[in-house]
Each structure stands twice: as C-alpha cells, then as structure tokens.
Image: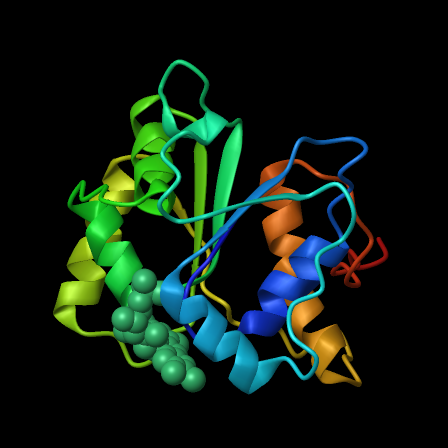
Length: 181
Ligand SMILES: Cc1cc2nc3c(=O)[nH]c(=O)nc-3n(C[C@H](O)[C@H](O)[C@H](O)COP(=O)(O)O)c2cc1C
C-alpha cells in the first residue's frame, strides 16, 4: 500500500483500518508529500494498525522492490497526478515507484485511487497508458445512494470498492440490492 500527497488521506486510513495484517502481509510506503496532506486532513495523524510494516521511500531493500518477490497487489491511495504520471512513464526513483513498476511488469494487481478533478488531457493519457498496462484506475468518487451519514461512511463507499478489487471480502458499504422479481 502506498500513500501519496493527494487529498483524501481518510481513504488511506480507512483502508488500513480494514486490512487484516494477521491474514495478509502488508507493507506501507508514503511519499514525502503524503505526510503534509495527512497533517492537514487527519487530526491526530495516520494510525497504523499492528502488524503493518512501514518502509522508508529510499529503502530499495524492501522485499517488494524486486520482480523476484512481487506483491500480489499494490494500492496507491490516494494517488496524486504526479505519482500517476511517474508510474505511467516507468520512473522508479524511489521504492514506491519501483514497487508499482514491479507490480505492472510482473502482471500483478495495481490499483490507483486518484482524487483529482477536473482532469487534463495529460492525466487522461497517463490513465490510458496505465489501463493499457493492466492497472486498475479506481477514482475516489464516493457514491450517494448508499445513505452514508458521515464522512467516514462516505469514504467507505470508495474503500469498499478497493477491497472488492483486492478480493477481500467486506461489508463496509451497503451493496445495491437487486429489484425483487
Ligand atoms: C493539502 C494538499 C492537497 C493536495 N491534493 C492533491 C490532489 O488531490 N491531487 C494531486 O495530484 N495533488 C495534490 N496535491 C499536490 C501534491 O501533493 C504535489 O503535487 C506533490 O508533489 C505530489 O507528490 P507525490 O506524488 O510524491 O506525493 C496536494 C497538496 C496538498 C498540500
């Protein structure tokens, strides 16, 4: 899991809150700007559940930095346009970007959660490249039909979709009920 300096730190916190480090090996990397946005948006800072291993951006010794040991999945949440562009163009100067590069080349699951709006053609072209390379672009667009009453519940409508794409069973947000026949 990677956190970058986009607005939406709550999405990262809620994903962390809903991952189970007893069932999955979870590693976390934060971009330099992630810390700044977390300071603005999460009173009390990021709360790291037990068992999650945090890595420095500069530590290329992290186990997931090599194609010989790729993670099954990587989520960049929230994902800045800068990081998205760097991943799209194969820049891998730190362990966050390198991990994304590894995940793509090893054909593992890369889920990017941008918040940006509106989008420029540059953003859309980068997204196109990433989609062609096999990434999942899952914008942080909460849904309003689920009756969320709080900001956390609203954020959870996005995090639930991330968990779904990770293949992690969850009841985080109500699902659309089928019409009775
Ligand atoms: C409070 C705050 C909110 C920001 N929100 C966004 C955002 O939603 N999307 C984005 O692309 N950049 C956003 N930025 C700008 C990025 O943090 C900046 O472009 C930074 O260089 C991104 O670096 P990173 O991709 O390594 O995290 C925000 C910055 C701050 C301080």
